[in-house]
Image (cartoon, rainbow, N blue to C red; front, side, top):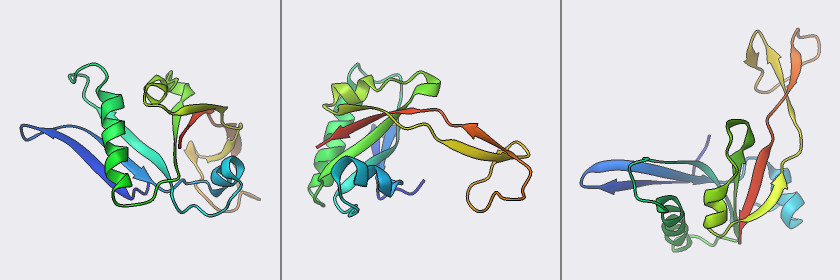
Length: 142
């Protein structure tokens, strides 16, 4: 993944977690949600991980502080993020952080060759199979 901002959560010289923001990977997402192709001002939470040893509600506090810091250095129109339904995530931390739930993403499929996803390129004439991807819960914060 490509991130524009990476923030670490440190205390007493110990890294307790991190959150990364970048431009949305799918231009169609911004066009579909906001009727614009211009991705300027739109960010996506790319990765987010915190230690389980942190106090309750740490996730929403970290998200809030991170967004405030980013807004000091760039205009933010909206932030999108996803919760992966295939691993049991429902996005409760995003709801607690003031994100609006927009529903499940559309069903997509990936082309698999020899047990691996064919990242990009042609599929015609290549032996493989299309497999459905897990759908994700989509959230937006304006």
